[in-house]
Image (cartoon, rainbow, N blue to C red):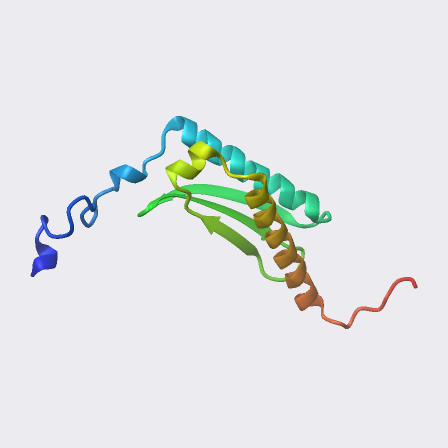
Amino acid sequence: MNGNNPYAGAPGVAGAGQPSANRELTVDQMDALRRAVAGIVSRTESYLPEGFAVGSELSTGANGPLATVAVHPPVGHPVSAGFSPDADDLDAGLTDEDRNEVARGLAASAAFQVMSAVGDDLTPAAR
């Protein structure tokens, strides 16, 4: 019956159904997150040829803000990468290395999906 008690749980931890106050981002931090995600989207697009759709979404989950970048290849299954940044990470700024790593990983995964869907049955158009 302890779970039914609204005062149950560790001190400083948000109760069931209650938002976590320490995971709220300021307006500046949300802007930094939007810029970081937009940078990942543009870098991912730069690694891929035309025909790949790249998009992003920002949302708020139970543990705070969530950022997702997804790629839908022309054939094959979509791939995505999501992360829940800490406020400290946003204040310091996401590094170019981190952004490039996510973009390269998404581009490689999307290319693999195309290769898996097409297989080895293609006839080369030229030599």
